[in-house]
Image (cartoon, rainbow, N blue to C red; front, side, top):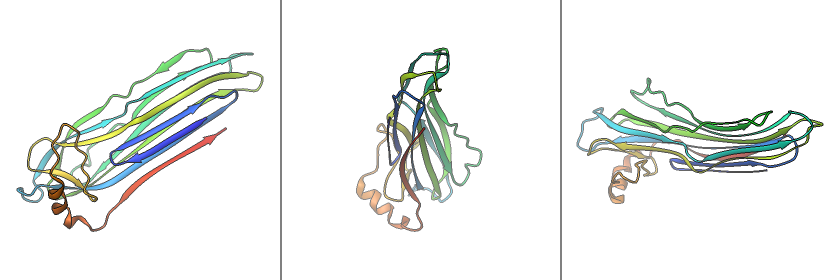
Length: 219
């Protein structure tokens, strides 16, 4: 069994694998969070501006199992991505949890689901501060019962996933994190580093940063 999780700015990674001959499982969790301010030098404070919010969960899950002595046994693997986005004017925004699973049940049937990316244009306010955070959970288990030996494997591999992008729809504004980070996708121009530094000088007040990765095994 093994688990490997990590957290970085706007991206979470997770891996969980179980491959043993008795009931056992492994799970891991990684998360990140940061406050952002909407910078719009040419606009008045609280001017509404639009961003394209993208939440993506990709990777793969697999599960297989063989057991003898009855129908008690199975394998399962899963990953889920939870996103939090809060701040002025966002009380009605609902970002669904993205899930993907694969299970091999008692009789060997397999089911799977693919997480659909979430895209939505959100209206934010110039000069206001927002919090964005994400949590990625991965899980893998191979299970059997006494008298029903089982062999098999389950893998939840999301080593390059759990991403969030916040791209300006228009020009002249963008979101800047308290450490000078942005969440634009590669297709969106990013302001020059010198400009980012100058515009972030006044953002060194109270801050909240979270980068955590944990893994647990259980039997």
